[in-house]
Image (tube, rainbow, N blue to C red; front, top):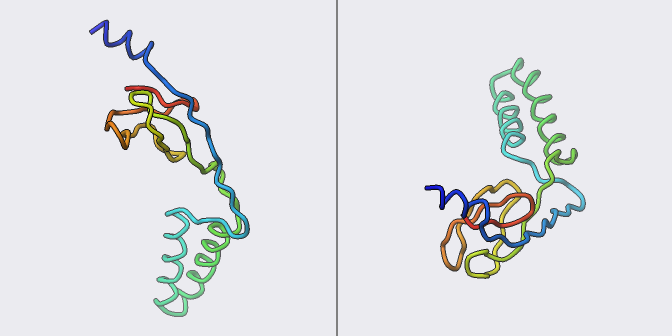
Length: 116
């Protein structure tokens, strides 16, 4: 048990370079912003009060989704598997993934891929 804990701290790792997503023009809405847009459009179908409430909600969703930059820096981590050396990538929100070549578990921490 102690041996496994020591290996986890002294484990193999490789550098994972973060490549930010570069967007020109409109931004890419996330799931919440899409839900706000759809909810606003759905409210518009309820009647006069629905339009009164739904139109601003839908427009707010469009504005937030396409015209405001995301507060989270989106992008990819690119590097090599610490187990086998195969090229691999992880999205900005992934904490753990499997190697596409050897299928070993790899953790993403502090801009590096760590053997799990």
